[in-house]
Image (cartoon, rainbow, N blue to C red; front, side, top):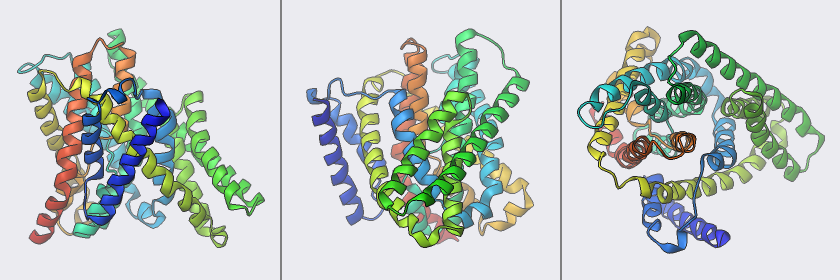
Length: 399
C-alpha cells in the first residue's frame, strides 16, 4: 500500500510542476500543501505519515546540498556579510523578539509559558523560500534580494536547530537560560559542522578525479551530501551546516579546477530531478500530516503570531540594513529591499521538522503548541507564497 500511495503523490507532484512550467508564478508549495490537506480526508492515505526522522534523514540532506552547490559563488562572496549576519545575529534577534511577543500575546488568547513561547519562536524562525526566489528574480529583477534570502535560508536552518534544542531542553526540564552555554554550544555546533563539511567537500573534490564516469561521480555526490549530514549529527555538530559547507566547497572546486569535466552538468542532471521529486512529496505530506492539527480553537492566536513573525522579521532586517552604512547604500530602495526580504522569509521544511521533533519529544502532550506551529506555517506558505508576485510587481512600479 505504501508504494501505491507514494506513486500517487509523485504523479500529483508531476502534474503540479507541469502546470508551473506552463503558468508563470504558480505557487507550487502552497498548492501541494492544499492538495495534501484534501488527501488527508481520503481513506486511501490513512496511515501514510511523515516524521521528524524522515524529514531530517531523507529530505533535508538532498535539498540542502542541491541549494548549496548550485548557489552562485559570486553572489555568495558579494553578500556573505549580510547572509551570515541575518543567519546568526538576525536569528537571535528574531527568536528573542518573536518569543517575547508570543508570550505577551498569550495572555489575551491561550496562555503559554515563557519557555514555550521561545520554543515556538525557534520553530518559526528559520526560512525556506523554495520557489519564491525564482519568482522574485523574474517579477522584479531583485536578484540580489533573492540571493540574500536563499543564502540566509541555507545557513539559518543550522542555527535554528541549536536554538530549538536549547529551548526544548529548558521546556522539558524546567531549567533556566544560560547565555554562556548558548553561545558555546552555538559556536561548537556551527563551527564544527562547517569544518566537517569543508573536509568532506575537499575529499569529494579529490576523490571525484579517480573516475571520469559520470554515474559514479553523481554517486559520490550522494554519498557526500548524506554522509556529511549523518556524520555531523552522529558526532554532535550541525549536520545541516556540514551538508551546506560540503556543497559550497564542491561548487568552489568545480568552478576552478574540474570545470572541463562537465561535472556540473552531470550533477545538475541528477539533482535537478531529485529535488523537485522530494519537494513534491514533502509538501504533500505536510498537508496530509498537518490536517489533524488544524481543527483547533487557537486560530486567532495563530493569525496574531503570523503577523508578529512578519513584523519582527521586518524590524530585524530593517535594523541591520539601516544600521550598517555599507548595506544601506548598497540597495537601490531601502523600503522595497526590506519589504521583499521580509516577505520572502517563508516557513517550510525545517519548521515542520522542528515541530514534529517537538511532538515526538513531548509524546503529543503539547498539542496546542504543535497546532499553533502548523497553523502559522500554513498561513506563511499560503499568504506569502501567493503574495510574493503581486507585492514584487507593486514595489517595482513604485521605484
